[in-house]
Length: 187
Image 1 (cartoon, one colour):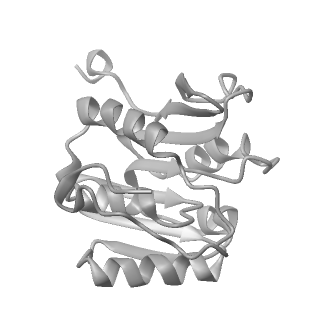
Image 2 (cartoon, rainbow, N blue to C red):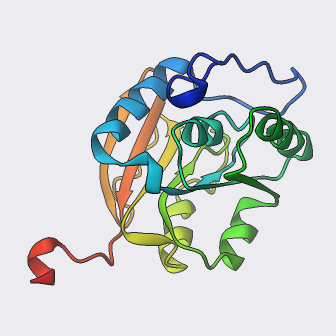
């Protein structure tokens, strides 16, 4: 596992083997960030990383100078590892929360440009993530929600769904803020 872009490009991450995680593969992460490079200006981003695990996605955004990266995971060893890595690599834009993601979403009031969720693939509540995000109005008007999930899973019937990209057994479903007005509606 490595950081693929930004000021930490090439940094190899070697998390402890006992973390309860399934990290996003370098191939899938590279494909995701190629898409995001064409859509976003990373420097102004406020990012929420749900089910952050090793924190490799949070670190990827911080490496690319995101303004703020909030990482949430319920596993204390994951949170401790990410906190240590953020200090070691001078990433003060990363803040961590040890919490159940759905409880965190119920209480969160900040809005984000990008919310990335990488839940365990066997989590039966994956389809509830868009509902939780949009009910709480956690995306800025032009914000983007991305959910990583098994490629066989279909989330296209969920509010705000825009597209699905598949890379082997991994898929990313993209959601746009359903409450956002288009440029035509604004004028």
